[in-house]
Image (cartoon, rainbow, N blue to C red):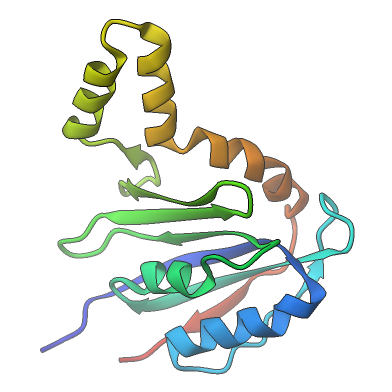
Length: 167
């Protein structure tokens, strides 16, 4: 049986120095390969470091990477996985304050909100537009975007490392 491959990017937006080797170890355990990231200072959070890793791997690698990094204090990251044959894409965002957020994405990286989630927003809003807005904001991960945006902009022009997984 052949493995369907996809690709994505891991953005470590901010991590304390002491956590950097542990992050590399966690990534390596997912991709079954030693990973040496190029860490640079994160201007949006003095004393913190950032790194990016473009990866190629089997479907589901994005979820495995997000899970391997989940729950570590002081760590902000995002993982993307592009859609592949028979599977939608995904984006995982994590902040120490908010925890982890996952969304299904289309071929352009747009978040796709399911019909059931939209119905839930209407029903839980019970006619209150502010409550419907709140539920849709949660479905889109707006709080995660707001918290991570300064870290994303601080990373412009930063080096990216490519990792290809075979098999």
